[in-house]
Structures are given as C-alpha cells and as structure tokens.
Amino acid sequence: MPRVRCEKHDVKSIRVPWAKKNSRFTLLFEAFAIRVLNDARSVEEARKLLGLNWHPVDAIKARAVERGLARRQATKIDCLGIDEKQFRSGHDSVSNLYDLTGGRVLDIVEGSTENDCKQLIEQALTPEQRAQVTAVALDMWQAYANAVSQAL
Image 1 (tube, rainbow, N blue to C red):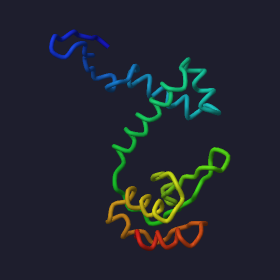
Image 2 (cartoon, rainbow, N blue to C red; image 1 turned 90 degrees about the horizontal axis):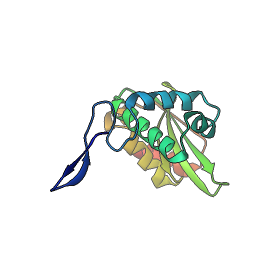
Image 3 (cartoon, rainbow, N blue to C red; image 1 turned 90 degrees about the vertical axis):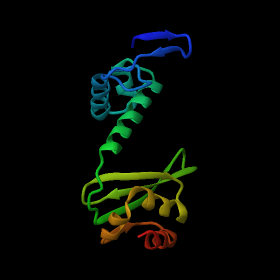
Image 4 (cartoon, rainbow, N blue to C red; image 1 turned 180 degrees about the horizontal axis):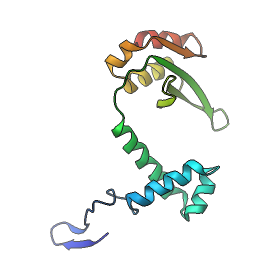
C-alpha cells in the first residue's frame, strides 16, 4: 500500500478500498485463500499451495470469520446442539454451540463448565432467539443441562 510521511504522525499507510486495514493482501486474494483453505486437506497443505507461512494464513482466517460474523443475521433458531471437544492431548476443552436445523456452528468458548455453557448461549443468541428455542441436544453431564435451562 502507498505510504506517506507525516511530520506529526510519522509514516502512515494509505487506506485503500481493496484491502482491509493491517492486511498485506487484497480482499480478492483473501477470498481465494479461503477457497483454498476450504478445499485443501489441511491448513498446512493450503499454506504450502498459497506460499505463505502460518501467521498470515491464520490472520486471513480470522478476518474471514470476522466478516462472516458481521454479516450474520439474528434468524430463528429452534434446535440447538451443545458439545464439548477436547484438544491438545485432552488437556484443554472448548464448548461448541450449533444450529442443528441450519447446520452451522454458532459460537465456541474455551472450557466446559456450567458457566462456560451459559456464557456460550448468552453471547451467541439474542434474548429473542433464546425464547424461540424448542429443543436442545447435548451429551454432557447434568451441569450443562442446568446451564441450558438457566440461559434459555
């Protein structure tokens, strides 16, 4: 991006409509990179095809998620799924919230406690959406069931 030197603010990059702030890539390249990531067998394979190291690929993914969340509308969600996933050799866990009818992940939070479950529902769904839920599928312990009933 073109850069200008300002006596008051030092060197600044000019904002352009074809790239996001703090991105080295055009929006068109980022869209291409996301398609490669979707079609590749792994992030590592996509990274090699794109000729990038891990950090720019991770930044592209983060910006794509941010754009997708900004476009998401508060639609009716009647069937939820809540699940816990272990990672890093089972030492850490995340809780996932799914729209079972729409077939999409709504949100993810670190941890798998009752409070994490409540936080997950409260940050992912508006009060109106929570009132419209008719069924919840979960395979976790009683604490999650308590959190779901409190949050909904």
